[in-house]
Length: 64
Image (cartoon, rainbow, N blue to C red; front, side, top):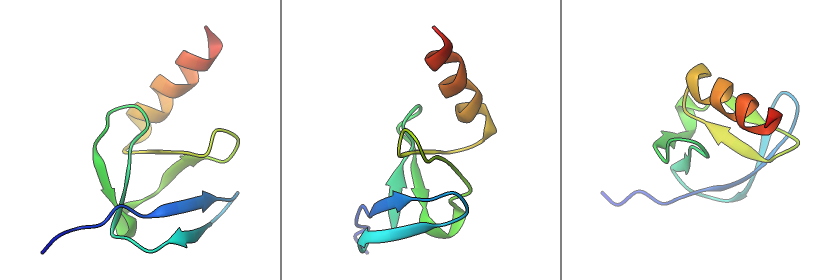
């Protein structure tokens, strides 16, 4: 089964699906995140993250 990349609009406590799909890509690691497993994102940057580790890396990146 082919998986399709989704396009989302990240909001504070949810997201809107702009284009249907199965996954998004982590902005830091490049890992695929199934929508049912998506828990971390940044509303201002409109980025998804695989885990808290990537969230921390993103925060450190923006401080530089």
